[in-house]
Image (cartoon, rainbow, N blue to C red; front, side, top):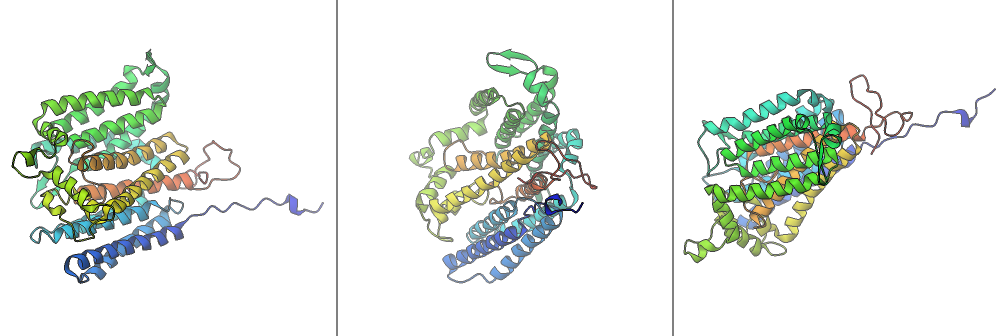
Length: 465
């Protein structure tokens, strides 16, 4: 009996890797950043900066090395994650360089470039050496112990601008709480993935909310309360709010109980009222938020928030142009907490909206990876990392625009801060690894919804999503 065409096995489905798309977008991201760098020089001094070529070559080399690592080790990763990170980091360097022109004795852009290089190096290390994200689940308790240690250490160092969140050794300073964000996300994702059924279906029902047993919910609540307590002592209310939001979001995603959102909002409101009323440092920021122009009426001149609002107003729809704004009047935090005001003034509402769209797209691609992953830990970790980025953008943008009281945090990739930019690159690397696992093909014989067997390296094959 001769074989026919119908008897032959169907051809394998080719799953697109999209690495060419990623490379094209990286070229665009580098070019936009270089044009921005040139625009600052032309707007400020009417000449092209002499080091524009070096800036473009350096940023391009970092992007190329990161792309090669992704192409070799995570070929099915989301093609948008890396270009967005490169573009945001490049624009951040442009804005910091622009503000450096106003402070010749305090240049932050060279240092920020060094930290960005270190961040990309860690990005490459994570992509290359972390072959399976599920390995992180084994080190959940080590992660939370390390995170708590990192948050406690700054208590023993002097306060900076009213908060004990920095460690300074000689001329080097860094913020350990930035790294604790990733470690706590790993712990929350691991614990909730292991106990999600007990959290969702056991315990007492109070009104419409299913309360888990204390034995199941107790450990993670204790860890969360301890971390928030340490941050309150350090007066780092921005990070404590971030951890609270991360905890509530992951608890909701793990259990599917919408009541946790209501409970979280209620507790956040009570806690914010209590801390804002009793803690002097926070209370002063609440007063500034309620009346940002009070210092002007009192004859002391505009404060930081008032100057920030003036900068946004001066930018209008299209902005004043790079290098032509006056946001340096904000003062010492112009390059860090208030760098978004520089973007709003010199790029206008259009440029500011574009920045927010980049952040929204970065977060959305993280959520997309979470939806496509089959293992609970990976899903929760992808949601947690994306939520961290989303909460940071909301808290910082809300603070500098007067929507909510100001908290001292760094805008991801844009603001001055070595610890922040390094942490952001590590988070993007983890999202790259998670999206690669989500988008990798699996044998066509595997049934939908069933986790396929792992390959020789321990990596599970996934559906193309």
